[in-house]
Image (cartoon, rainbow, N blue to C red):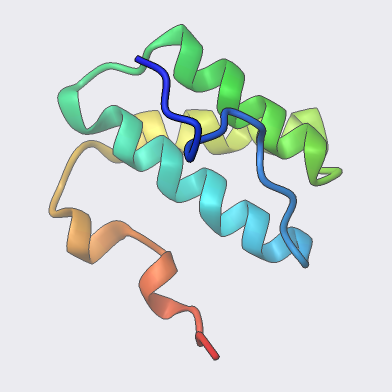
Length: 85
């Protein structure tokens, strides 16, 4: 389905730290159903590349998310710890 208000372009964040939070949370959300799909991995890797994050960091983040399990999302998502202005 096409929606002109939703774009598939990977976001560029103001700092690499915010990109890291976004990617780690995205990986956790992707694993909620017990599996992650290749399209999700490709898109999140594109986010990492757009934000200048190293491939090794991304690979480690994927491994960590896979090993973390599904748990309670409210307890594991990092975005809740950010201070929003």
